[in-house]
Length: 241
Image 1 (cartoon, rainbow, N blue to C red):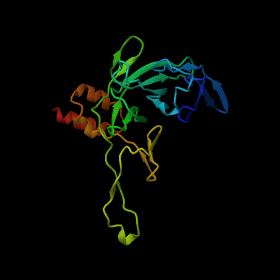
Image 2: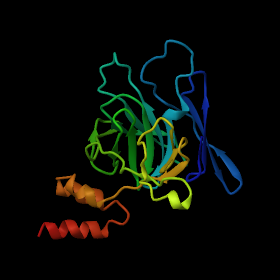
Image 3: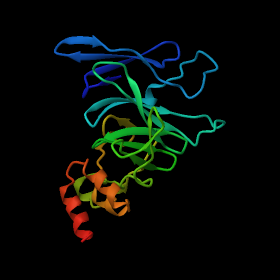
């Protein structure tokens, strides 16, 4: 797996695939970074490959490179659901587990990173949740636990223009099937519909969040970290007068 933003390639080693070897490329040279181990949710019962590529992503968040691991828990475990574990991968020094994003649900997930926010898609409910690791979380002594910033939301519906000759294109556009099984997600913010031949860049609209986050202090902390936030912050300040 390669991350162009960080110029880092990640190779999976060992039988279980959970020991990762990063290499850093710069100015025509390659540096071997320290190996690190992804903690699997339970001891595997066989030597079958336990770490899947679809459960791993790399992304730059607030200027730091992270490895994101989507950890699924078995239904028999005491866990409330899956979680995303963030490992900080520095240029020097060992990789360290820093954050855990609590999803509180099970099923099929996909990850994007938009404007330094971790967006976790959930196919079963056709919704997504957003995490901001800069907001205060619950520190347990080793890692910081985070919960979604907002209630689960769906992607804004998209209308596909009707295909056909020009005289016939007056037909009503066709609603796009959200969270289709043919969707493919790429980092940091790309969603592709393989069946319909569409590619989208995911964006986060800030203005609707004003009404979804009642804690004004937390809302301002959230908005101050976002791009294009000035007008939204001004609107929040004007409402509080």
